[in-house]
Amino acid sequence: LKPLERFIEWVLTTGLLLSALLLVLGLATGSTRALSFGIVALMLTPVSRVIVVTLGLLWKRDWIFGALSLFVLLVLLCGIGVAAGFAVGHSTR
Amino acid sequence: MAVMGLVMIARSRKRNVIADLETDPGLLGGTFSEGDKTYVYRVKRLPVALSSSLLAGALSGLLGVGGGIVKVPVLNSFCGIPMRVAASTSAFMIGVTAAASSFVYFGRGDVILPLTSLVALGSLPASLVGAHLSQRVETRALKMAMAILLLFVAGQMAVRSF
Image (cartoon, rainbow over the protein chains, first blue to last red):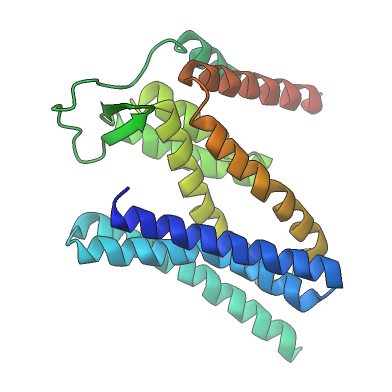
């Protein structure tokens, strides 16, 4: 494996393990907060992978795939932005 | 879906690999290792791959079936991508595309936390086992398993529609 691929593997494995740990903790203690953090960690794992891929490709001056990866990242950030809007709407009701 | 299953059975002995490592894989192709051997593959018919992704997204939203069930057979049968590479590429894509909408569902409060946690915890070890197993199982067996899955899902959807 190349260094970038190895780092992506590490990011994905760490995200999954952290998420699994929080979910197990949440289910064992009945903590809704731990379950929420576990789910958020699970959802953020692919986002962090896209961030790593984007930075890696731009670092390698692979402009075409770097730009495509940046577009995917922007779509994901839009999803997070919409979700944050809903969350703020719920809390102010 | 049933047609794709039959196409996969018919093509189960054909492989999308080039043994000559000097072959240029092109912009989207690459190399991959299987055991102690390394192969080259070239991506063909890119518009078909793009169309299948569009169809996969639409079917996923409309019928609730995973996009991989469309992408993997199309990438393997029509776009010259080896089975293992098609499966891993599909898994890599689904994670990202699903993440975009999952944030919206989560922010809207549509996610049932205990149920989602149980399903996620159940699927995590199984997906790791599947990824390890796919490296050990023969390519033809993987194709046949995919074909059987396609035929099963197609049959199930047909039965439910009546």
